[in-house]
Image (tube, rainbow, N blue to C red; front, side, top):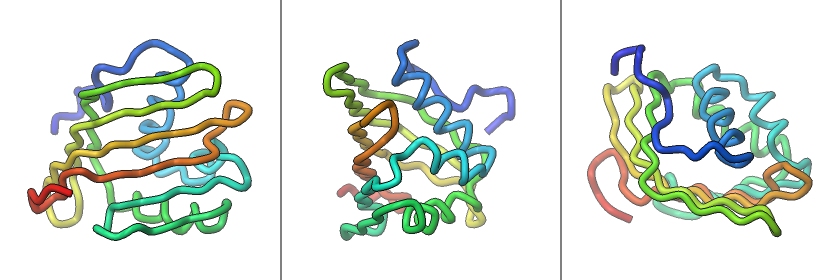
Length: 137
């Protein structure tokens, strides 16, 4: 992808929209510690990236999960669906993702949902609905 493209598209200018854009920016910067600061100390992340549920609890396990971002380059997120609530603070987003990996360009579809507490992510459902090989979850 050309470097001139914005890393996100179709993100609303809301508090959660800005948090999401910051999340993507931190992924591109490979700034794991700042990503972790977006989460509560007791956060739970449930991931379907490996076609089976993986659970990450707390800062150290989240750090382990986010080590996978170190190989990502050129991440582009085109939001296909966005839904958020204010009380409680929640986000549901479906994204068409393109990124460069050590194996070449990968295209996927993610479905992320966040539940926030005191402005930080307490629960993160990190779902992949279309894998890089084209298979659908």
